[in-house]
Image 1 (cartoon, rainbow, N blue to C red):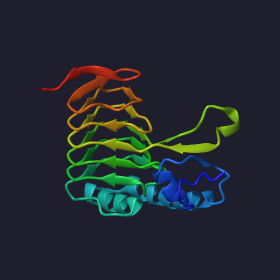
Image 2: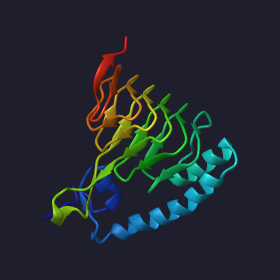
Image 3: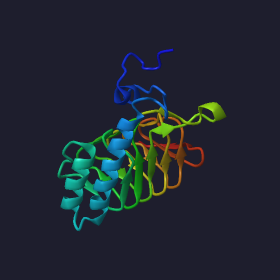
Image 4: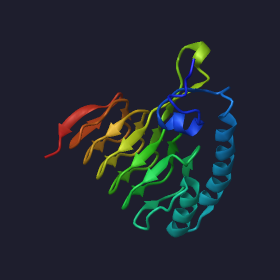
Length: 191
């Protein structure tokens, strides 16, 4: 059975949301980039100012991070190449992004400390647990993700939305709303 979703390239399959077993013949390509990201992440987290952090993060994600975007360390990512950061983004201390399934952060987004964003999951069925199931995460313009929140694979946080501190978001957040809790539920509409 062809699990490639029309492409045999492992990175294209991940971006398309196609599950990839860890024994896939191309899985070593992921490991190679992860190893490079670990090295660069050590440099990133030892950086002494925001400009140096931005330069290191640009190397990790493979494209320039705009000079209006500020990231505080420590910052952790397992892959990096599938992160897209907009302009005027603020990411506070101790955030973790697992991005094999793609993470897009649009312009003017604020992300509080200790936020976890993951675009990767695994099936719960024992025979399939070693299969990576990607799901893109999109944080739309002007959203605010509160301290300690967790955004799970496949979630889009709408424009101007607020995710309350400590929330676990497992479904899309409509624009102009506040969500909170575990799992996150709509708390109010922003006018």
